[in-house]
Image 1 (cartoon, helix red, strand yellow):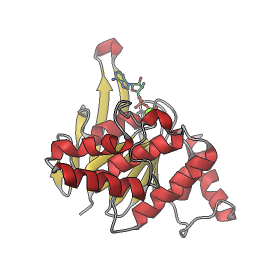
Image 2: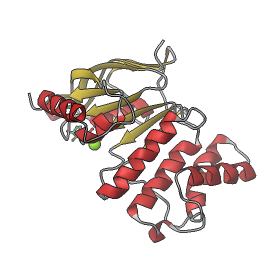
Image 3: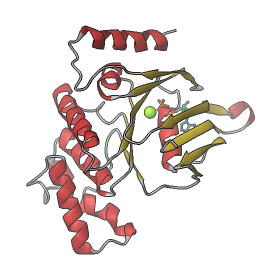
Length: 250
Ligand SMILES: Nc1ncnc2c1ncn2[C@@H]1O[C@H](COP(=O)(O)OP(=O)(O)O)[C@@H](O)[C@H]1O
Ligand SMILES: [Mg+2]
């Protein structure tokens, strides 16, 4: 049984002539320990799809199954990383992570321990008491990642998490996310990454779902057959990138 199964999922906004179909008839499954990317042109419904999977919005049609059971509301085993994290400017880095654990009924001391653990995991040791405005963009994104990991998610949903970072910082964070994913002792087990960066999708994923322009439909569910760790200079890597680009531009 797949960890996550999406069947015939559609989402539209508005009615009649004002109706906007964000995505249409999306079906795919995600296995435990799988890294899946979703690529597609801007406006094809990628962010909306992640919000629906996360339970932040309701689909118009279709069904989402998690471990074989339909899900209808926010799932605590999912966590999401956004393009830029909305950190509370009046809270320290540690408090920004700790605060997501409050609704889970975890005692204060335990919350602090968990927050420190994941700040360390993302390389922010020593910045616990800093305020968001004192951090670089890359460091803020690390806080966003620590905050997502702190809830021990089985599935991590990421919406263009590296696109606002400079290329060196983005490269470093990609490697870190891959390390976290490949380490069974740290969350997450599975990842769904939305990106418009094809190199990034090929570098990171087991599979790439390629969406058409709006309304987004699946053009192809493509398996990336490259050994890990992947090397961007490998001719086979280029071939994969070229292939995905060619499907996208059909
Ligand atoms: N809350 C909303 N109300 C109305 N239309 C929306 C809303 N959110 C997204 N859309 C529309 O749905 C489409 C898909 O948007 P989005 O999921 O952000 O695309 P992507 O992330 O692929 O760029 C766009 O046409 C967008 O304008
Ligand atoms: Mg988007």
